[in-house]
Amino acid sequence: MQVQKAPASSLRSIMAIVVSMAGVAIGNGLMLAYVPFVLSRGGGPDWAPGAAVTAIAFGGLVGCVVAGPLIRRVGHARAFSCSLALVILAAVLISLGVHPVLWVFARGVYGVAGNINFIIAQSWLNHASENSWRGKAMSFFYMTYVICLGLGAWLFGLIPAEGNMAPIATIFFTTIALLPIGLTQLATPPAPAKVSVDIAMAWRNSPVALVGVLAAGGLSMVVQGFTPIYAAASNVGQKDIAVLMFGMQFGLFFVQYPLGLLSDRIDRRIVLIITCLLIAGVAVLALGVSFSNLFLLILVFAIWAGAVESVYSIANAHANDRADPAEFVPLASTLLVAWSVAATVVPLSVTLLTPTLGPKTFIYAAAIVAVAYACFVLLRLRTRETVPVADREHFELKSAQLPNAGALVEGADEQAPGM
Image 1: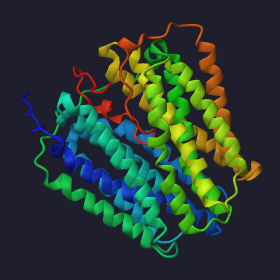
Image 2: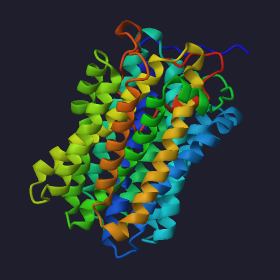
Image 3: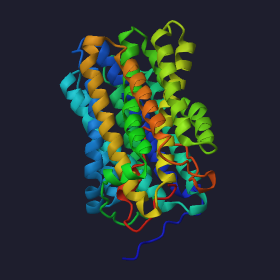
Image 4: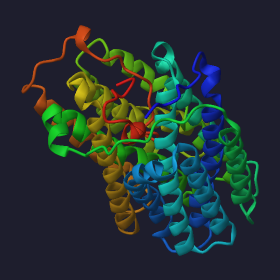
């Protein structure tokens, strides 16, 4: 089958995808702040805020399973539109009033749609970008999404928490996000091949990387998902929570990037140990930082979030250092599923334990996961030689909130770019 080549001569050719996902990110940022705030302050059951976080991750796992068959059946553009329709439907359910069980279900629906969005966007970007600037395109995409995610959280501070203005705003931004994809002339990628998930291959390739992605899934969902719940339970005001969630996203640039560059120069396993110790150390600070000092609070949680994001990107780079080109696609899909499983199990555990151990349970959980993973990496340091710097893939700025989902729908004979 002859596939039309995308007219990719510059970054402008992929702006429709980036702009659409930016609109999705703003709506997502609003909901990430709004749902836990209202559930924590609205007198609902204690399990509801944590269950909403777990539902997102479980929905994401379902999205991993259904995305490939859906895209093969209807194509990238139609599947993208359908996934945004699910985002809108989830927001409509939330706009009907505070019904905890319905809200948890709605967040699960969003989780399904969110992972389908990521899978389509990343696959489409890989297909549309030229080799000479694909890395820049992906970095631009990641940065735009994360900044807009923070922007959505900041907008939450300007919208009344009472009533349904926040979900209506999410519907507005998501509807706007439909337009660029609906109007784009960018050629759609070929129908995806079936990609297998091979845990044994991923373990043989790098136990450190596989366990690292598992750790990253739990860490990311716990830190990003439970921080607004913790703040709301501590009587932090709506505007301050919005500023906190906005500031946390910038840890991606100011913490992850230096650690990533360091991992290009020394053994990535050593950098992973340093990163985990940083996560555990900042967790101790997070236990004691006063909510009355907003600037210090934002600084601590931004460093914490940035370090958590670094585990995923460095572990992913470490996996690719040791993989053969033929393994890139199945390796990426396996790591994504592993991330999604951990992103479901760890928040679920925190949700179950929080009524007994209190609202700081997620901080303890993040510290325990980080220390346990650091110990595992330390044990593995003696079992395998370091990959020479000249033979490594270059570190790329990635967010654990947008794992490398595009590989799930890449063609079987294609090498996943940027891997």
